[in-house]
Image (cartoon, rainbow, N blue to C red; front, side):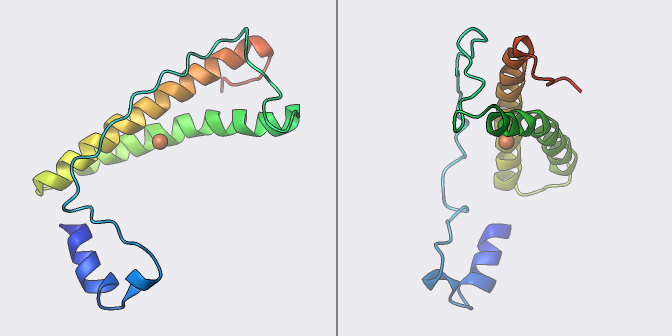
Length: 124
Ligand SMILES: [Fe+2]
């Protein structure tokens, strides 16, 4: 509902479509939740996977730590606001978002866990 209103009131009237593609979220099917299994293994983890530099790779380790907390914040926020939503399609999409973020958080936790044996301080 919000996406359709935004699209018809802003994007269509201002002709933004010639600059950027606006997805049709209203008529699109439900958001698929993708399940990943990266099979992280501390024995095969390359701590210099990015640019063959430990410091550059550590940036991604730090990002993974904070994304875990960020995703939990998104989940909490979405759960809180979902209770106020009346539109069933939007409510379903919020539920899908919560599921997606929970999977992201799980993957980051798995990644964070395999860095511990490599002395990357991933626990706060
Ligand atoms: Fe996420």
